[in-house]
Amino acid sequence: MIALTLGEVRDLTGGALHGAPDDEAKVVDGTVTTDSRECGPGGLYVARVGETSDGHAYVGAAAAAGAVAALTSRVVDGLPCIVVDDVQTAFGRLARGVIDRAPELRVIGITGSSGKTSTKDLLASVLETVAETVAPVNSLNGEIGVPLTVCRVTPTTRFLVAEMGARGIGHIEYLTRIAPPQVAIVLNVGTAHVGEFGSRANIARAKSELPRAVPAEGLAILNADDPLVRSMAQGLSCRVQLVGLAPDADVRAEDVVLDERGRAAYDLVAPQGRARITLRQSGAHHVGNSLAVAAAALELGLSLDQVAAGLAGAGAVSRWRMEITERPDGVVVVNDAYNANPDSMRAAIDALCSIAAEGRRWAVLGEMLELGDESAAAHEAIGAYAAQRGIDHVVAVGEGARAFGAPEWVADIDAAHDLLAERLAPGDVVLLKSSRDSGLRWLGDRLAGIALPQPGASADGPRGGAGGTGHGTTDGWTDDGQDDGVADRADVSGEAVNE
Image 1: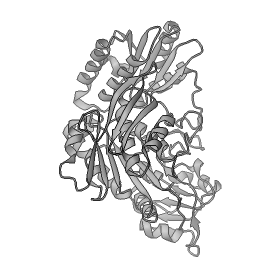
Image 2: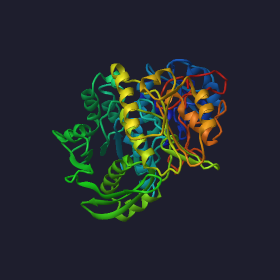
Image 3: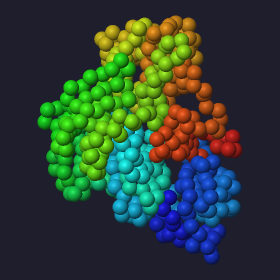
Image 4: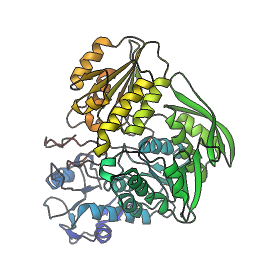
């Protein structure tokens, strides 16, 4: 955190300071968080009123943990409060104030219907090999998640990777006012959340808000293999680089091969030269993600050798994204059940097919959410795609997954666990894929032998503990019951909030 006095926080947010009339100079220089359990000395607690709980109830817990103030919408005893009309809007203003106090910071924005989090993790892993880098924990990519990430910037941070999601027109434009990008990456335009946007054209319009926010001296990195993304180059005031497999892409992949785990290697061709790239992530779709990363890193001053080394060394950070576990009995579990839409479903099925299997391949599929009127047809198409790719066993889980038309259907994840526990054999490879709220990520953990989270424990951090490669130290879950791109959890009081 870049240190701010309570007076500066008040002025940035347009609030009124209560409980510290003679102490405007008290400094906020610790964690800024919406989760009272993550507060520490010098921290600022952001109290939100959510769908299932009120963050104001935890101001006392934040004070006990060492917070010096709270951002609130009403006066609360026990801690100096900066009281504002709207906490979300004020938090965005505070984050912009942090950006404005970091003149050497380079901001890279990433959006797309799928692949944002994996690409964010990959880019942060590459950039932090040369300089201090801040990136979101898991999928903090909305109106609260972006400010939470920004407020982790320190005076020595050189790069800020900002994942930017949207559920409507204008959302990304709002986020770019909080964290104005010098480099923008648009990965793809799919059908995620089409039920909320109304059409794929509207999704493209929303995603285009990111490159349109880049200044003339900046760079927009666009996927040459997605016609809707490629077309975003029209009318931009900034420089543009196309990335992909297309022969006219400025940064492209040639001679792509996959190993027995579906991990890609390819020749990176860029204006700076040519280098052989090897990836540790399974699935051919990561080639496109890594090309965008390479283009951004080269723009930010890294050499081809540094990019190649950084990509080769980048492992998994965020959980439940093509997370592969080989069990002692020889069964391989591929847990890719953090989110799902038709495009990412196909990519996951393709990745399953690319993984060498001595036994059978299983696709265990849960419902894809937020597809609106297209939901039934989209599920049926994915079921047909899995059959076309020759998957040995396709199991649909949950009432909403009936529309896949899979040969096998079970009512819930417990029934799916029982079926798989009985029938999986050594050499089998089993993919778990669903939208997060369909719950298959927990089934994947059970099958892989990963302990399920206990109440009050951090369940959404990267494997092996929060932080991963160093650019995340908190799981991002909140006291307010809101969906911030990650699951919520119960607070220290024991009050249950939505997961």
